[in-house]
Length: 164
Image 1 (tube, rainbow, N blue to C red):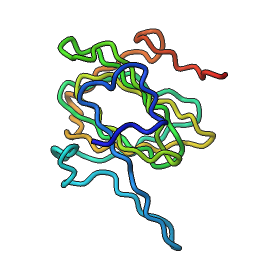
Image 2: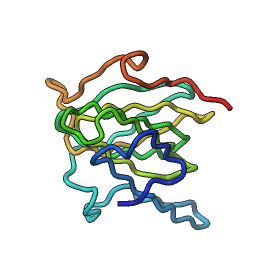
Image 3: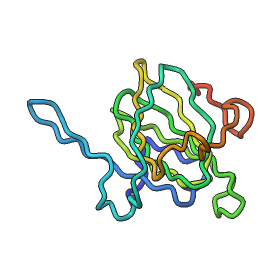
């Protein structure tokens, strides 16, 4: 497991079972290639459910939700986001911990989010962000494994920008 980069602000201890992987960008004169998740990433990959991209406009917050079964693997491939995790699991040694990760073009990182951990993000770049997720489960339209609450005032986190 890779250690968090300086861009990963951990307000509490790293949330139990959260893992990160620094993504390597391989540039050449044609552009670049960046691998996100491989089947031989033995400390991260367990199984494949689907892949999707979520676009977020500047300043928009997409939060909060968690999954009972699904494990998410987020990588921001355009723009920058502040990804926030809140551990409310009663049986977790890091219960009540909050972790922030700044990921995207300036810090290409994969973040694995375990089941049961609330998560969400805010686009912090001037341009739209694109987040790729490789969850372990396909989305079940009739019975989604997704449990949502309001992004403001429901968990101990304030999404406003902290200037200083």
